[in-house]
Length: 415
Image 1 (spheres, rainbow, N blue to C red):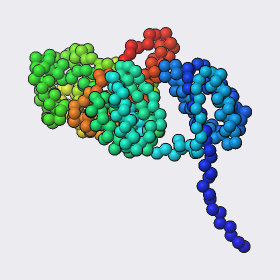
Image 2: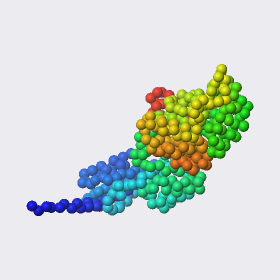
Image 3: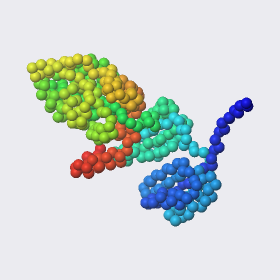
Image 4: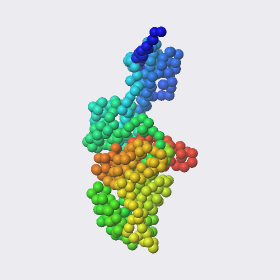
């Protein structure tokens, strides 16, 4: 019996038609276009629509087959009826298929200038990355644009755009796109000078009359010039003899960073796990966590004897390695891979957790931290981190307004 060997042939590449409609936005434009075409035997391959200041651009990619001329005639009439302009272009295939090297490039600036955007887009082009979509994530307190790109080498693109960020004085983050940006995450925040505006040890030292002395040691430790554990012991020693009531007093003094409540509130809405990891002290970090509804934290314990601080720390110090260990433990307990973790910090003792996390964010950080982080934010609003996760200001405010409507309360102030 003869054997027939089937040879698979490459599928024929179908001819496609790109229709682009542009003009004043109004209800029903998209409906009008597709209603006009609904009785034709054509396949919709892609649709993109954007509105900027009431100006609509609607692009539709069709596989029209033998109906191409009829489609062009009908969309031309639609444009005439609506007082809009239309262009049509024949091509082949669907270039949106099989895109690889997906990445999200997020640019934050106050302001974002045409020069900055020109430099970003030129860098993307030079790297071989293609810009598939651009959308605005915020217009205040900073302008944020997100570029959805394909064909990117994420690590190389980070290096290339880091130079652009420094030269233009704007923040640029590069993150893997696709499923890597979706789903539940663990977000771990440093506390002092990140979640709050203060350094707690300096507030405590001020009660002992040693604030300036301790501040100098803190600054050197955050720059990475001193071993954190030893510097903490030196600073805590000056607290010897203070009544433990000072902890409550300082807890009442701390000031949240602008946008901190918005950040945590939004992360909780998304079902994210939020944790605080601090080289500070448990009673004060616990007070902040309780205020924000955060259930997971790691910090240092001060020894108290007869109602007074002894100037010593109990147990292992939460230092640079301890913070990274805490991030890993929180992630393991939540059954989340490290790729789904975010770490945010400002000092050298945050470096290990920033490098361990799937996305490490340097927030108004020392230069050594910025150089090792995946993304850097230099504006004083902590909720801008949400933009790096692909969450827009409009989505944040809509959720706040819906909650306020449901509870009959006033929406929270922004940021």
